[in-house]
Length: 287
DNA sequence: TATTCGTGGTG
DNA sequence: TCACCAAGAAT
Image 1 (cartoon, rainbow, N blue to C red):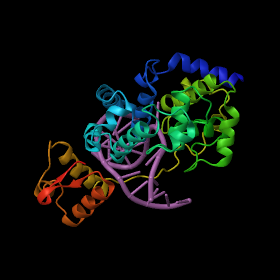
Image 2: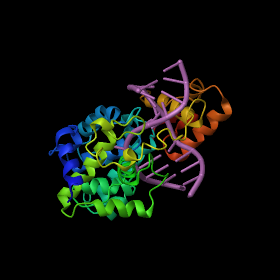
Image 3: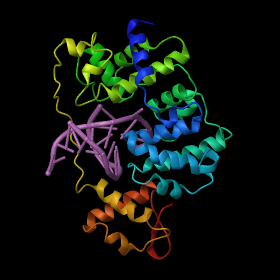
């Protein structure tokens, strides 16, 4: 433990958000649900959906007993609806393979649908108080700036990056878990991607990016176009199905997207993903 | 390894 | 206004 650790842990104690999945009464299932929902989706939009989800499905077994289509419907407009399918599949796997209890083992977590290296480490750390390197985009940015002296990390985590994060991890598991969430929180609230609030940062005194004069602060980042893409088309088609209690006729989908070739392609991909099924007489529905 | 996969808030 | 983004995973 160094002054860096004490400084950041003190900051976290004073500034941490009171998020429902961080409360003591939150279950491991609640933590897992939050992590799936938070993949590429802002906290503010996750909050109401998470509350409703846990109210309706307080355990993995309760979700596993439902159709995957109900999960897709309850997912609402969080985006990337394949995550809803994966979360449902994870609930089924937990029910079948782990007796309905979210596993506390990193490898077992990693084997669940929708759970990658980050999410497995996050659940093991946040829900079970274990010591893991939790390397999300926030943590990577904070460490790259504070220790690496650069504005942004590369596209994917490197070996040296992991080693650096591992070397910083406190020995005590409970402290390591708090450290992990504290670094994430700093990245989310202060050391943000665009306009970091350096005047509020507890690490500003030692930050190498700051002492170097903020090089490459305006580094061009990859812009993702959306209008007119297959993604947008899929979203429109799925919205029609979410808002319909049963199945819909094909011509209902035609009204959701005018261009027939792209509409066909998008519908085929939704069918291939299992987000949509074909029912009787050429009608369509959630699975 | 580079792509693909939604959505809506915001500076 | 509109480009930019927000706790990744799967392939």
